[in-house]
Image: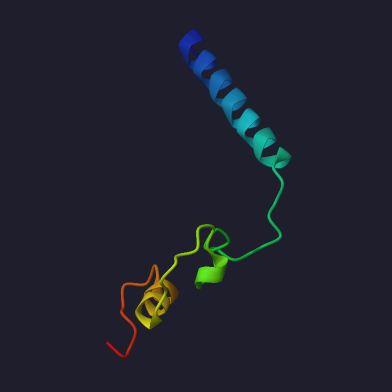
Length: 73
């Protein structure tokens, strides 16, 4: 094995080891849903609640991020 290949192998093993140790140190989320960062629909769940809120706003908010509009459009 050439010195360059040996150095590359040592660097690769070191990087892989550090990545594995980093992953072991992370806290796992108890929430197993893939959408844990999506807020529930409705103005009461918003940080800055709007002054005017009607049925169209409610349906648009409830359908986000889906691409299909509500069925009554």
